[in-house]
Length: 149
Image (cartoon, rainbow, N blue to C red):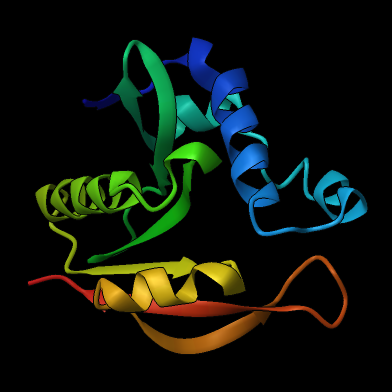
């Protein structure tokens, strides 16, 4: 079941983001350097569109959409606990995000992707439109976009 996140979910969502990122084999040092960037704050939950996936009364994944700009919206986060990766949870969250985006009159979704997740997003119709340097000097993140029907 997908539901709107509440402020009290912030710590759990942050834990999921960090655990999900670790799935890709990044070093502890890198993961530690990303802690701030992967932290879901109470303010984010209050100001952004944050939805969680609940299974057996536990949060196992979530996404965050920024507020729309014109007819475009940015998918800020999409994370699933490692034990649920490859089981369709990410797809369900993404489809839910598309529906939310359309209800906000957006016809385009953009995101900066972890390089390991690009194939997932491409399989859902996203295309790479550029790249942006990350907080780590010399590391670039692909910028992807999908036009909604």
